[in-house]
Image (cartoon, rainbow, N blue to C red; front, side, top):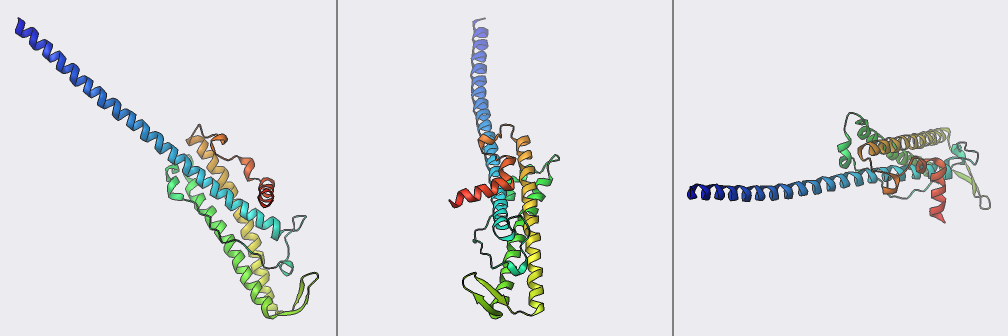
Length: 228
């Protein structure tokens, strides 16, 4: 009887020790898994913030270009013969699309394609500006008939073919900038909505910009503040 009690007590102690070791290992695994999930969630959230910031910068740059150089005070397109060479700083802006591939889901899987389209639209606008600048330099380099240093106006004696090419490049620039602003703005708003679904705690005070930040009035005001 004593031997039986000893065996039962030994088995109980062994079982308790094994259960304790298993519980400890399970809790350690559970805590580590939670830590990794939390870190992955934060990394994904920051990836969305970076993508949204890139869209914001692209839109602001195009809005600045349009408001300062391509539009009259009453917001009419400036014609080709009144539009000089436009300088733009060589600071590339890119969207890290692979970092937000986790958004490829049924509810908002178009986000990834829209991000690629928005980036392409922005680059297309920059390329249109560079092409137009190149044509403007070619036309004005050898065809200046007269120049007024007071008004900084020049009389260009160019052939109709060169002027037609310059007019076409100017029209393409206006169209590319308008299209880039529209595409970047729409994708910015779509990305924000997807982020609010994916991250319920992703409120503006955590870094997610609002729809008001991307309006043309806010972007122009932001540009003026940055220049002061």
